[in-house]
Length: 195
Image (cartoon, rainbow, N blue to C red; front, side):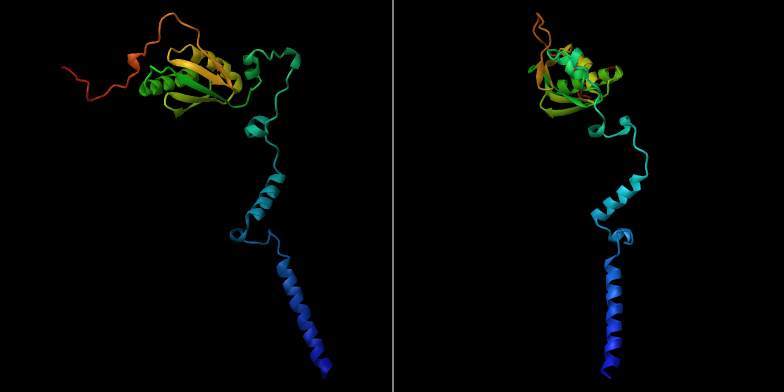
């Protein structure tokens, strides 16, 4: 009689263990997408991208792009322009400070004109105001930063430009800087239209 009870109970225990182990062995593939954790989603993304063709170097994010080959024999470390040309394909930030005589309003208008002038010359640049009369110009191609630096140093409102930790000043002019009054925003209330 004891045998009649022990054998079915062992069978039930065995079935329960098999069912429990099969539930534990559910992989992330068997889960519903709504029940997946971040780790499961990462595994799914890796599996999905495993069969993809690798991206072209120009399509890769900037930090994954291969660095260009550098010929050290032709490199002149004393010329910072040569060092900026090595940044081809990499972003470079340039800090522009305007003269103290320039108002904030004039600096805003002048910096937007500089950005448009550089973009008209096919130089991709983004402008970010950071402080009163101070701006960041971000060049997406570091080799274009040399042309941008030279252009900005020609502008009368620029006090100095800082690129890669080095400051550049415009050539000294004999006359003292005078703020250009044409850079003021016109106020519609103060203008009178005479008929």
